[in-house]
Length: 272
Ligand code: DGL
Image 1 (spheres, rainbow, N blue to C red):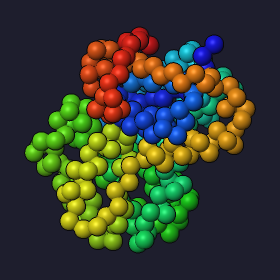
Image 2 (cartoon, protein in one colour; image 1 turned 120 degrees about the vertical axis):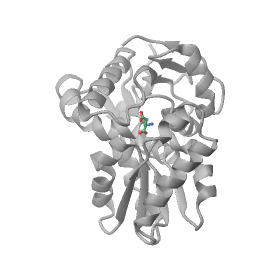
Image 3 (tube, helix red, strand yellow; image 1 turned 180 degrees about the horizontal axis):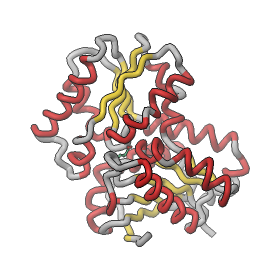
């Protein structure tokens, strides 16, 4: 029986994380689910994001996934804690669900020489204050400046991120962020959609700032996690398979996903 690692996002963004995970851990089976029918999650309430995410996680459990990665900052910020502390503890003690915020905050302080880090993310992630709180635990001396960028996911999901309208909003968000401190030397892209605009952001910056995407960080952290948790690693099946699922139209998913994953994919529609 296949026991794949489940990778979840509200839409396509998690594919940027899956791509990096597959590079470091090609031996495992994977399934990816994008909840495209209900994306974006970024502006939704805590309750709604939790409800949607938990529904998707239970779908992964029905596909026999021993481990699910929430490759979505919004879901990691708003749903992960409740899932880990209530749902898994009560009903699925053998299963594991991990997010993308913890591995990123464990390391992000090391990128900054000035100890001033900017965060670009969805409104949901920013309002949750998860990055401020978590970075404070690992790097108490680091000052964190958050910028909500609500227009970016819609531009990226609709493949409209290379036009002047997108440039306008990227510039607006960058200016608002950098106005808050001239010492920011590191900007974390705390949304799994943003790697697609990393180069654009770098080209719009007028001074040297390190722009950090999280896919590779999350992938390295997963390698480490699986080494430390052989009881989980042993359960995951290892046939190098990869299947994509979406709650919306499968053909539409396949047409968009290549942009995020780097190559064309096939997808299947599911009903939750
Ligand atoms: N990719 C998700 C994240 O990392 C955001 C997408 C959304 O707003 O649904 O936050």
